[in-house]
View: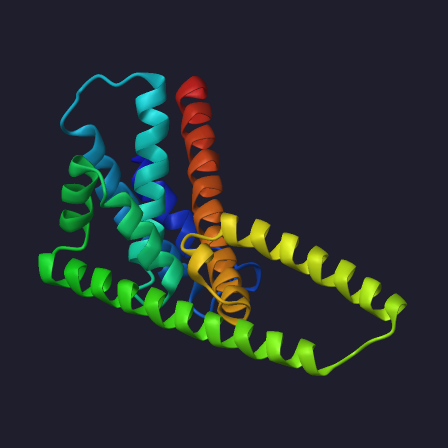
Length: 210
């Protein structure tokens, strides 16, 4: 029994209560299919790869596969694909994985428009909040407490923006929504990788005792 087949069976029969999505097995199978395809493309040009090259190939393929399964429904996935497409070799990889050049172009255009709209909305929110601050006059203690709280929120928001792909261009409301969606997809990625590790250990044990 091959590792891919064993992993496919493991994912198929994973209890639904442990998974983060409505169709957990199908989502994991889609990710696995894209990931294996991407891994093959990464390893095809070079038969022998160093440990560092393999680590980069695994990370790139896992990220692109995770983003491609979102079907351009989230800003973070578009940002991840756009980032992966910057380098020449990675660009070809992304295009092959998405099957159609027009689809990749459509996703990139959508991402650029989304970034522009989010920046405009963010500027409007900042402008409105500044005008409100000018109208209200708070007591010194309240001003200090408010300033400390806002600074803390701003710092934590910046940290979150640095963790979510494309987060730097998101407003606070979009950032929360995108973060939740990103976490769900990361959970799928981790679950599949864990299944892969378990399946590999199982095959190794069978090989030793066989």
